[in-house]
Amino acid sequence: MTLSGKKIVLGICGGIAAYKTPDLVRKLVAAGAQVRVVLNASASHFVSELSLQAVSGFPVSTDLLDPSAEAAMGHIELAKWADILLIAPATANTMAKLAHGIADDLLTTIYLATTADIFIAPAMNQQMWKARPTQHNARLLQEYDIQLLGPAEGEQACGDTGPGRMLEPQELVEYLSRLHAPAQPLQGKHVLITAGPTRESLDPVRFISNHSSGKMGFAIAQQARAMGAQVSLVAGPVALATPPGVNRINVETAEQMLEAVMSITPECDIFIATAAVADYRAADVAENKIKKNADELTLTFTKNPDILKAVANLPSPPFCVGFAAESQNVEAYAKRKLTEKKLDMIAANDITLAGLGFNSDANALQLFWPEGSRNLSPQPKTDLAIELLNVVIERYQHKTTH
Image (cartoon, rainbow, N blue to C red):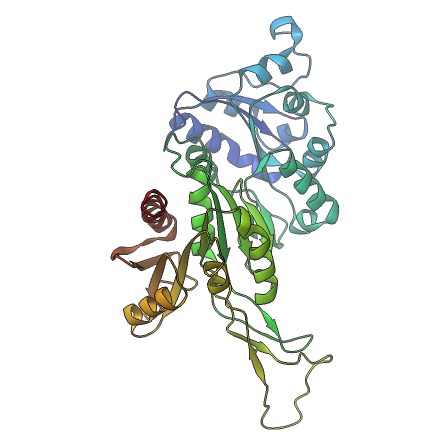
C-alpha cells in the first residue's frame, strides 16, 4: 500500500468524525504522502490545529485570504499544489455547497480552483444522509466525477444506527492507495457485476429471499475499479457502502435485475454474476396482507428469468463468469452450469463450510472453465476478489487473442 510522492490536501468539516483525522493524516503520511490540512470554521470545535500540524508537518490552513500565503492567495497555492483533494469528514452542508458551486470559505474555494482528483468521505446522521436533498447532491457530485468514499453503516454518535458513518482512516488510505496503484490491467474495460440477493413479494408485507450479503460482489467491484475498469454494479437489497468510483444500480426483484443488466450488457466487456437470484417468484402477489386463516397455506410459484444464461446466450456476449453456491456435488453441479449456460468461467463455493460464504467476510472458490480449473484457498473476500480477477483477466485475454 503506497501513496508515495502524492500531494494530498485534506479538507476537514465540522462533524464528530473529525476527531479521527489526526490518525488519518498519520496513516496518509505513513503511506508516503505529503499532507496539507485545511480546517473549516466548525471543524476547529472538534479537532485542534496543533495536533494536525504535529502529524502532517505543515501549518494548518483556515483562512481564505491568508496573509502568510504567497500574495495572500492560499487557496490558489494549495489548489495547484494538490494531486488529491480528500474531504473527510464531509458534512451534508459542505456537500451541498460543493454540489452547487458555493465557494464561501477556503475549502470550498480550493475545491473549485483545483484540477486534482477529488474524493469525499461523507459523515452525518443517517436520516440526513437519506434525505432527498443530500441524495440529490451526492448524485450531482458523482456526475462531476467526484468519488464518494462511503458512508459506512453502523452505530452513530447520536445513538441512531444506519448509513452515515465516515469510513475508518485505514479504509480511506487503502481506497486511495488502490485507486492510485500503478498496475491497471483492466484499464479501458467495462466490468458489469451483479451482487446480493433478490426479493420476490408474496403480499405487501412478505417476500422470499436468501442469505446473500453481497460482500463478494462488492469486493470484486472494488478491486475491478482499482484495476482500472469502468465498473457497473447491479445490487439487490444489501446494506453495503458503494465502492468508490463504481456506478451502482439498486434493484429488488429478479426481473428488475434482468432489465438493469440487459440495459448495460451491450457496452460491457466482462460480466460477473455473483448475485443470488431467486429461482422462483409468486405467480400472483396478493394485493392485501395474507391472513392467518388456516393451518396450511399453499402458494404457486413461477420460474424467474435466468439472467446469466440470457446474457451468455446473446449473439455477441461479454466474457461471462457465473457463481455457483452449492451444498453438495459442488464440482459436478458447477461444471454442468458452465456447459448448460455456455459460460466462459464459473466460480463455485461450498456453502456447508463453516465460516465461509454467505454473510461471512471470507470465502474459498473453485474455478472452472472449459479447458481447466483452479482452486482459490480460504481468505478474506477482498483478497479473494483480487485472485479471482487475475484469473478472469488471464482467461479473458486468452479468449480475445485466440
